[in-house]
Image 1 (cartoon, rainbow, N blue to C red):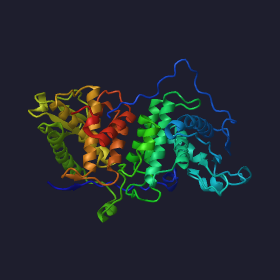
Image 2 (cartoon, rainbow, N blue to C red):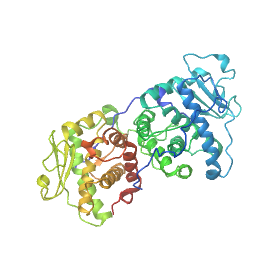
Image 3 (tube, helix red, strand yellow):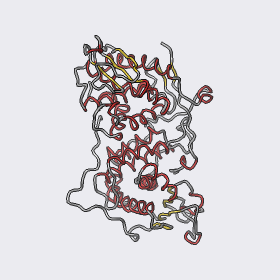
Image 4 (cartoon, rainbow, N blue to C red):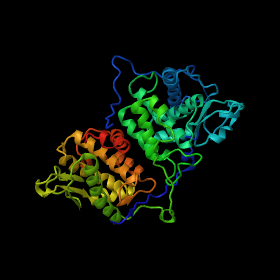
Length: 470
């Protein structure tokens, strides 16, 4: 079989965005109500002092988050690290680089930096001989822009990430930059779960806002093609989202224990001049051939090596607009029909709408969004052959998780018919966030984008055991 190479275009991010943070098959339940409790109050200005802050919404959100972060780590640090958490000695600084009054910052901001240097940025800084060491500094106008695009919780997320670096300053950080940054994402996820559970005195988050947060992480990834060994590497989209969800699901102890030298990162650099010259994805026809060859190969091997059975590949075909007659809904974009069910034939049918789904996702998101999409109904065919359900929410959860398992085998180079290039697994995350809630794609399942990505992540990292299969 031919060796079909997927390529992912390098994405040039604005420098300010790229530098924002310099320094099982589970279903997540979020936003649980706090019975018989009033809504959180804003933290009083005296509770947390932010030098340079004004009484605008961004500074208020940041101050509330910082107050809750102090409470959270005072509570968690003794259990996780066996010691008392020492508050940040250098304090907090808010800056609007377009309107700086030097008198407000007599010793500069974090570690004595000029306030203008924080433009488009937020950072934790520790330099014992410098003024304002052990501090967090942020550009409030930049956070306002991000909040306008990705929701009001973004300033709190940035504070949580930078506070994670403060935790690392007290206990030691991982050896590499990419592990250090993603561990801070994990700490931010653990705190966010605490907020979602209603434990915070001043911060709140609703379930739909979690989807916005994950979309925001796309801006915070390194440019596609960046080496994971780069001095300031922060991680791919999948790496950062995965770390955040790991903390959200499993808490700060997981963040402490799972960022050693054996941690898997999907970030990687382009290795051929062809990748660099094209800067793009494979043509649609090439990707379609990849789908037609790699999914049967994956599931045939999965049945033989893991599931102890023999897999019969279903018929795989495209349509344009009108779903096959055996589809449960005529407007469905992804279809699985069991054997003998009308157009299902003797071996079953997996079909995809190339006009309304796979064509647009390749153009909008990238080439690996196509196999990610088609892998979901294909996994339903595999479940059917295992005697498992194919038309309920449990089936949808399992199919998304199994798509993560398929993605891992592609990423690991285990299939002879395909290799990935940097950024391809990021496209799986984008597809699930952008299309996963569309009833024409996954049917009427009540799963958020956050939950779908979490399911994919479980399959990617844990394999079939996380997916209610085998």
